[in-house]
Length: 65
Image (cartoon, rainbow, N blue to C red):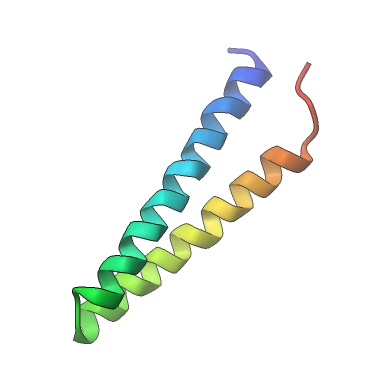
């Protein structure tokens, strides 16, 4: 597998993490209450941070030849 294809799959993983974060944050804010909502919110923000770091890495790693 070439470096370009690997970067593409890694970026797809980052995008999926960001979409999961959006869904879980909305779920925890509007549907869940108490400790369960807090746990889901913490998990969502972890997904948000990891997804952002992945996208940051892909964007600033430069073009793959």
